[in-house]
Image 1 (cartoon, rainbow, N blue to C red):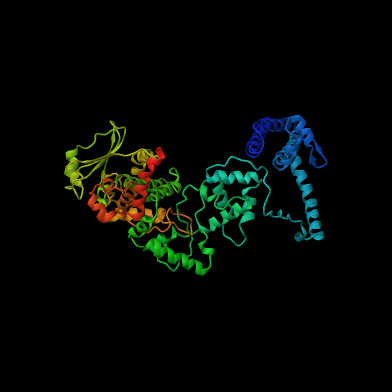
Image 2 (cartoon, rainbow, N blue to C red; image 1 turned 90 degrees about the horizontal axis):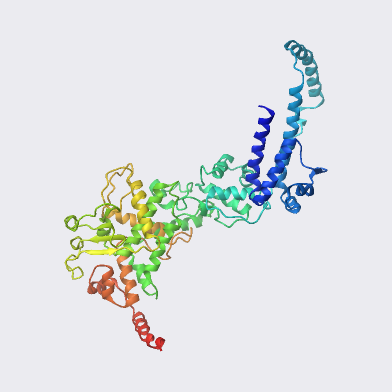
Length: 552
């Protein structure tokens, strides 16, 4: 390598260092000025002006235009580059001297080697006799600082996990080797390369031990609890490594999702308390939604608003599609199951058998749907929205006065990004779930696996998919903080009709309007669904009468 090539290569290394370590601290103008100053030092093969063993920051400030106080405060970020420049200049000069010295002939080299060998052997023996090898000086590792001071206190918070970890390591001037030595005990098995894989974005924490280390990093850098976990690309994924050896594998898989990350570190009695609660409430809890609905009916406000929180919880825990395409597709499917159930008020059969006509394709004629006894979700160019059309013959109460032999038709409202999620599901997620098997043509499809290649839902599998969504996102878990609604129990899709009927009753007091939401008659709503309390009736009447006084 020529001297010019070596200099350019070293300049590139210093440029990269400045971009990584100085850019988060200094302004772009100051960073460029410091980088240019270091390039000049490299070209002149010299170091910065020093007073004793310390850099003279006043001189550096005068030459770069950067504030001297700012330089002195952040010297720990700048000095490594200066030190490297000094070492490179010194080593470069030594190499240059060696290059300019006259070459020796092969005979001269051999003669010198034969002359030096006895002398070197004698020096080695003398040294071994005067000082044992055990007395050689050993480098002592630097002391671990429990809470290192940050180099800067203002930053733009990144959304990604790896980017956030890199940022806070730079803030505290730490390498992954130093961080590993500071947060992993000597008796623990976590290797420093695991930490490096987190920093580089190749892997993310998954085990309970990894989450424990992640918590130590948060405490070391004085970050809020759960700061890093909130940035993981798959927050709804259950941790691995729980101490559940007494359970069979199937039960372990069902329970693990509902356990806190620090489960293994809890006392035995607390662990048993959590397991008992998960088994009683979530795994084998009552499927009677009416227990929750009876309690909700005593409240003044909207059950639909409570149920909507479940869809918001699904979005909050949505996995990163690029890294976890199948879990992301399953989450979007769960979201749309609940959203369409709340907007349409259909029975399980009609929702499960709903056919799909993607945008740009010709919808099925109504007579074809009548023959199939199924509805269809299709894009309506006339209304500019997603339309659901279901022939009356497809309903259980097809001869009810509600239909009058006319089909059910509703254009879904584009509220809270509903259309965006429908489009994403139809264009990408649905194909991810199918994995190339035969398409049943329904809007909702199962996740195709090695043991299950039929993508069509039946009455049992659709019920289980809905119930699993409620278990994971609906039931509030006091031990993990996940879940949307306190007191909710596992249930199936049919209970949404109860939610809609009760909600409209509380808002309007009309059994007839409530029947419109669930495609039924007012008598059936009064008999089976609605619970209308006396205080609600009085409140509705008062609201109408109060309008007279408000208008005055």
